[in-house]
Amino acid sequence: MKTIDKIPTSKLQRASKLVSTGAKVGVNYLKYYGDKITKSEIEAKERLNENNASDIYDGLKQLKGSALKVAQMLSMEKSIMPRAYVEKFSLAQFSVPPLSPPLVVKTFKKYFGKHPNALFDTFNATSVNAASIGQVHMAEKDGKTLAVKIQYPGVAESISSDLAMVKPIAMSMFNIKGDGSDKYFKEVESKLIEETNYILELQQSEEIAEACKHIPNLKFPKYYKQWSSERIITMDYMKGEHLSEFTSYNQNQDLSNKIGQALWDFYMYQIHKLKKVHADPHPGNFLISKEGDLIVLDFGCMKTIPDEFYKPYFELADKENISNKARFTEKMYELEILRPDDSPEEIAFFTEMFHDMLSLFTQPLHEAVFDFSNAHFFGKIADLGEKYSKNTQLRKMNGNRGSKHFIYMNRSFFGLYNLMFDLKAQNIKIKNIGF
Image 1 (spheres, rainbow, N blue to C red):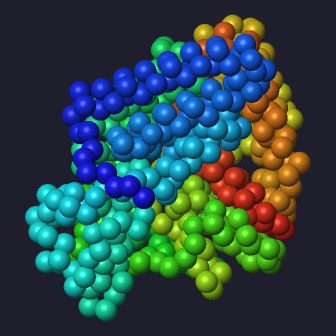
Image 2 (image 1 turned 30 degrees about the vertical axis):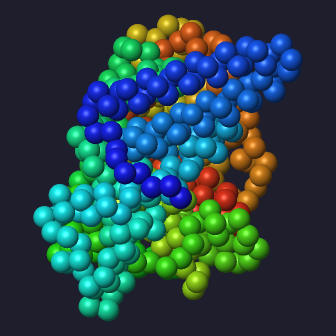
């Protein structure tokens, strides 16, 4: 894979890159209008989506940082995003062009004050894994094989300006109007800032690994403070396949069930016992070992769940409350899904919309055992997402709905469901940890 020798770090450089990307998108629309003359609308739109997804991703992968992280987040919205975007943006999960070896050494010396060979017995300056915020290198020290994650230059300093640049795109995509939108972007910005703080990540990694070590078939790397800093984090190198690679060929149903149960228990224990959650559940953060254990990586994005949100969130998911109109409406206001300034039309529309969504999406939580290989269940989720993404009435209304805490809680559940479906996990005990 081609390496990158330089990353745009100034606000002007990064803005210029996005402007050039926007120009390419403009050309794609001209091609689209031409295609409509000779092709069907569906064929023309598919080509437009493929060209735009490719050009946007190519621009973002050179910027890296929070701009690329947003693409990674969007790749998980399989029921909302066009297929071309999901496929292209999903590359941001664990497969992007890495920094060149000379830039790696320069970056290491900047962040740690030393050449990597001064700290480790051996250090491979060629990356083994590159993602949106940092890339991983193999090293050895005292007979241990280590993974050293190095943050890209300028990532932490450009978060606010990057988000400001991609904000108009996200607002249009998710029908977010200007009024009241700032709280959602501030939530994303605060989490991205936390993800660039590797000292915080190391602390969170150790805390969660210790708290969840009792869960069967779950493994975590050991972390090393003496070889870590604010922009570099060192841990044990864990051998295994990315979850998406494993699911592409696995035919062992018992193994899928075992891994699926470990993944489900891990998330339920965090949410219901620790009141915080690993809020970045994409395949690149999970490995499957040869022994069939689930290895969890990257605790940079952790969402703390405040009690004032946790209680109504799961009360709204309760089957009896979903079927009780008065209680359901009460929780909708409590969670800021319905607003005091809503019109009768908006109240009726969003009540029906969220009732439809929750009645379907919470089904696993209402069962003692659930089959996550059920394609019909996931097909209905996709159909519902497509129904509302194309709803013209919704486009006319204020799309700012719900507490800011929904962003990462819903992201965690959607990501978890998608991973469970990828595993085709069956007979999963929903309350296996006894919450």
